[in-house]
Amino acid sequence: MSSQDSDSPPVEEQVTPEDVVDLFDELEIPFVTSKMVAREYNCTGQTARNKLSILVDEGDLERIDLGGRQAVWFQSDYEAATEIVDQLREYLDLTELNTEHLAAFARQPYKLLPKDENEYYVIVPRFVPFSVGHLREQDDAWQTFIINKYVNWIEDIPDLIRDKIDLGRRYDHALVEDGTLELSDQEERDRAWRDLGGEDGGLHERVDDNKIKIQRGKEFDIIAKLIKNGNLPFAAQPIDESELLEEPENIELRSYQRRAWEKFRETGQVGVYWPPGLGKTFFGLYAGERIDGNKLVVVPSSTLEAQWERRIREHCDKSWKWEVRTYQYLTREGNLQDYQGEDSPKLTIFDECHTLPADTYSSLSTLDTDYRIGCSATPYREDARTDYIFALTGIPVGIDWREMLEYGDLEFPEVDVFLYQTEEDKREDIVQLVDEGVGETLIFCDGIEAGKALSDKLDVPFVYGDTPKEERMEIFEENRVVIGSRVADEGVSLENLDRVIEYQFHGGSRRQELQRAGRVMHGSDVGEHIVQMTDQEYEKFSQRLYSLEEKGMDIRLERRA
Image (cartoon, rainbow, N blue to C red; front, side, top):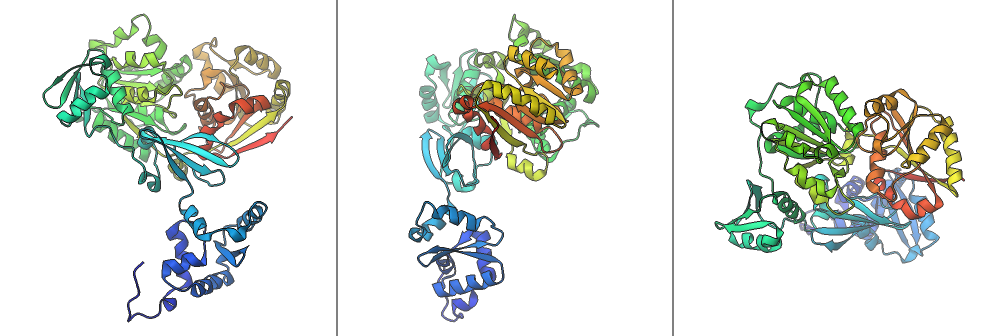
């Protein structure tokens, strides 16, 4: 704070109540103390209290007494201020609170701790409306998030945190192209040789001052290792204007999709990591219609295979240039060879690319294709091989979920967790939930036999692996209530879906939980996501709900039986 000029009027005369109000916005905190105002404007404590009193009289602020001649001032729209203070009084002697430390906490309501290289814990009180990265664990009082390079690539990390951490690259320059790893200089070349394991790690020999030849068939593994070290070693393959067709008339891009398209044009390979319902499929259709040549879409299930085929028929003028195959089909019995050489696709789209078995990524990376796009709402793997996703797909393109809320393109569902003492209680209650429900409902049931029994009990169809793929989407769309096994987990878009009920689920899988909540985010209105859990299930698997809380969704717990 600069000192006063001797010719200027006393600073007390310069401070106005409006200045004090502006302080809230400047500091981005919900309250101030008289000491904070006095320090900020270099005035006496009495002057600060006078200005605050004027604002209280005018109804702009509320004064909360802490006792012991201490007080804090809240903006008048902070309706819960008195209630919060009353609750705190039950556990704390507020007269002993250091208001300066309280103000410091308001400015930085989290603690950063190193976890691993390029990875940090962010520890936040549960009552603070703050989330970043992946929610690792939580209890009634605290939340622990993890931030790392993957979060940094696809989400917005607040500047206050970014300035305090190091998520840098291992190498200043690392580029893999035509079987060669290029680095910035000889020192980094030799360091990379050691880091990546030399010949045992897939490298062949050091050449020139800054290059390393990679062993045949090991390029994907080297790229994955470099990504794990914080580098994105992709060589840009810009799409030439001569290869582009006119814009399709029936597919219009939103602003964030347009940004992704420009990045794709610059690089020729992107991973599109957007929340459910934001048009990853339509972005892929648009890109395919703009690029002249054959297109291949690779999907994890025959349900998605049928959905893509239908979307292509509905929206693409040259549908005969598209082919859709499952990951399983391509990686068995040499089928991948049918898409090499002269028969190779110009563009390949890997949908739900996080779902591949770990040993499948390397095989698909050998696919002979000029351009590639990966799509996923949850580009993380619970086996710690997230680097494989990025290695297969290219430059990551993400967007913050909150930005989508601001655009109005995404509505978080209402999330209710219903608790039961027994499995029988849960089974009986789902009958009532279905009877009382309004609109279209998708019930998830992982167990096949349990799904069949539930289908008989509710008299509704059950879609699972044995359901013919060409019939699945029709069943989903033509029935008000449908039960789905895991075949409905990934990428199924039901535009009029109002409610999702999870009856059975896969343990503590956070990715599955977020995918299932995402199904109801495809709707036009605020949807409802219900998770049925016995007490034992909640105790063992409640961590699956973290993926919803880290995105900012509110979860209500209700005892039903």
